Image (cartoon, rainbow, N blue to C red; front, side, top):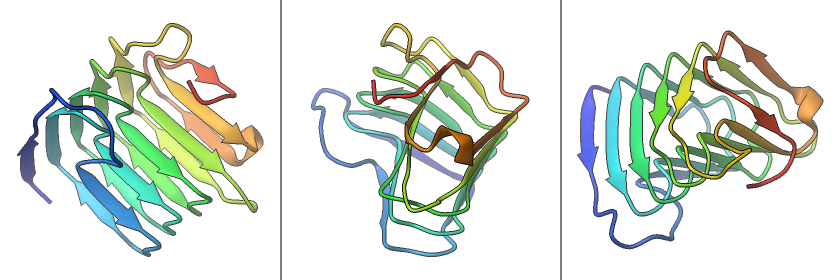
Length: 140
């Protein structure tokens, strides 16, 4: 909570500057995550986790990279901008659910993928009040 991360954006790849694997209850709040070669936040098979009130800018992959059936994920009140691929990718598997609420996404790179990409069950993703988003049912 209340942190600032500046990375080295010259080299892409990897999972993310803030990464969690097979975890429960990880909360990222009020963070500034900037200039990263990989994704800003990566969560792999994590349950009941959230990213809130944060700024994620200038990453080499995705702003939020939430994959492998992370259940009950919440992203709210974040600004995700100037991202190489798209603001967020969520992989729904095994009935996993996610909520993306009141996020602002802009100036993200890949045409048609500037907002949210969903892999799998798009009906399990709730989108409310996001600005500048476009949903793509594929990984961009």
